[in-house]
Image (cartoon, rainbow, N blue to C red; front, top):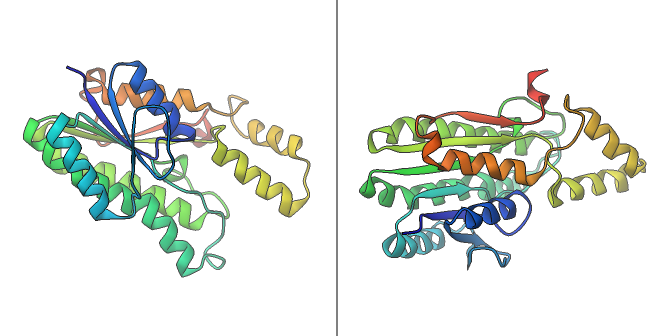
Length: 241
């Protein structure tokens, strides 16, 4: 019988690579997103709508059980605290944190019943270090790290594991959009900006979504059955500096 994985935000970037990797590994993947994808079973769902997330997860849990949750849905936002409006803060937290809360809360009853499960939050290296001009985003990713730790402790008795994957600079559409916005605002040379970003990483390159997906798959597997409450950094050495 196939294992079941629910992923939020699995239609692009890191989430898409994770969905592809889990499907290839033989998982039955259900992707909760507002944007359709051909990988896994797409379920249109806004993760900020707690009732909608619960309804979708309840149906899947009753039909298939839930072996893994990958809480990936998120948005980026660049600004310091003074330039972050209340609306900006609310939007970032609604998607990045409230969405993770909704998915986790909905999945846990099924995992408790079967006495097993793996929850993986896609956080960021910004859950470990601070970065300039990233107040709300940094705050939200630190919240996911906290969620992984507290959930791990609260549900270890049910053999449910919770961990956070903390990617550094990964070459995704989100990355390219952020660079393009910076170039438009600053007038910098885009090729030079990409080179500078790569040079910031001790390994001298950007990470790839597939590399994050492989780590996520490992954490969901029995190979990682003694790993819980951890922050798994995958950043080319950036946070080791």
